[in-house]
Length: 159
Image (cartoon, rainbow, N blue to C red):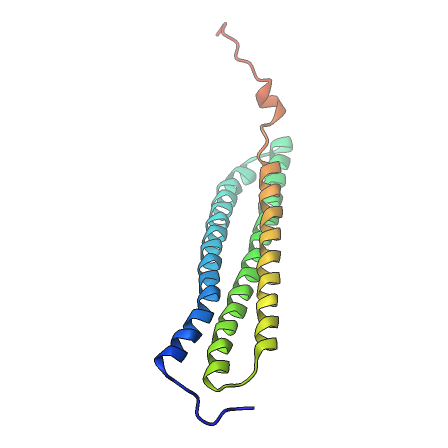
């Protein structure tokens, strides 16, 4: 199973680095996606904090509208948190792929199947994160509608 003395020549290490380069670029992309998710979450939290005092000061239909807005923001926060968790899971699995690529080459063991399954799991995880992000953006787009009463509002010039 293990070779007694692994070849640690520069060319061997260079080959291992070459193999690990694609997953490392994937990690960079996942990091950029996590930045987008964190930015959206920050905006959602800021908006919910802005709504809180208006909700507490409101009554009737206005109060109901603020409650509806907060429920939508809460749903969006939940979706962003799921997408973030799945993205981080994908990043961890990708890190394991890189570690196993190095370990398998250094100790000359056959971990090809394990590496492949980890990479597949990583892709499924980031794919699910992208899908949840798509849902979150759809929820956000539906929530940003101009109220009908504002579209029909007119100003009386006889003031």
